[in-house]
Image 1 (cartoon, rainbow, N blue to C red):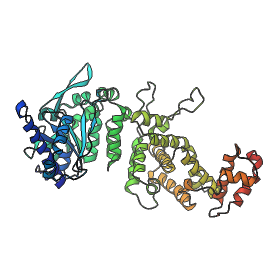
Image 2: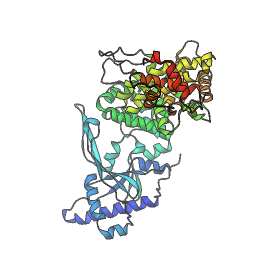
Image 3: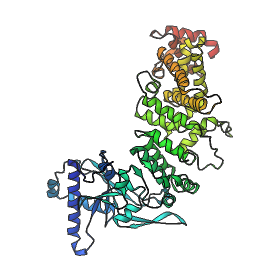
Length: 519
């Protein structure tokens, strides 16, 4: 790969550059009597990397040599308040957004405040150049102003340590990042083990960048990424929220399977997908996990109308959830925790690994819980179809089940996908006398084709012909505990009689079952 280091700015990027340089001159002029160091601005890291690779980027990190990001933005606002400056830079309404400052939080490995503002249609972060010094007796570094080279050396990878100097218009490379880009290599600026011990989140960041860019990780770095000391620090030093942010970026990318391959191969699984607060948290056998995530990648790559993926993954949110759920398939081999003292079922292990491992949002956690608890029933219905048992013609049996799955967790399609991926992992990757993936997937395709044939893919959105009040009035009784079960009878009747809009038959069915319903 030949990297051209001459950066060509878009019209908006050029407008932003001129604005920032104008603000810097304004600050230098106002502070002339104080003999402060002149303000030098650099665009840093990911924007420079992506620009050199020809990748569009709308997020720009701006590093400042002599003042904090918040101070610079305050002075930038002063500069923009002058009408002549607005006119000079052709600033329209909305070109200067609101300032948002993310405070430092050393306990969560965020060691410096960052000021973010929308400028000229671009998201721009401002922070000062810094150096970080770590000591053995503290997990938080001492942070102070640094030079551009010191700032580059503290970064996670050489390809993320490049600067575009706004004052000179040149790319600055203090760590060999350009050569590493040419070699398609992810490499740490300093010695890898110490780099990861200082900030173990860098392990996941390197995984993300390697998978996103299609680069390989340097061998010496790979060897220590799964070091017990590094993984121990990952669990102690880094908040699970930040781990979740990195994982989300991986799984929402174009090639999430590459990230999971690296997590698997480098031995990172048990440090990420776990409840680190629980001392007795078990560790699942992940030797067959690859069969599940490789299967999901295969389904995604071979997506076509009517295919498993096409039927079960219907939008980008569902895609992210699907890739999140495939990280949890190994947990299905373990038995559930015993019930709680209250008698209530304990939270399933895969849900614990999601909620506490990478702080999965509640919506995703609910789907995982439902997928775990409904998996046996899903498998049973698939068996009925694949063995062509008489019950496969019972439209209400399938429709009621689908509605139940969806009402208890949502996204019933993803619950079925999870069951399919676990099935592949168990039968193709782990079982004695392993089945072929194509054979297992054919069963699931047959199952879904049958649901399509029954016209039940949208069963959860089917509305009842009557509600509880109307039903009670027609039966001449008061609503009570019987109402919910009676409405289920109505829905089952509707499913057996598709297209019928007159509710008389459904009401009569309820009347026939009044003794069983208890009214």
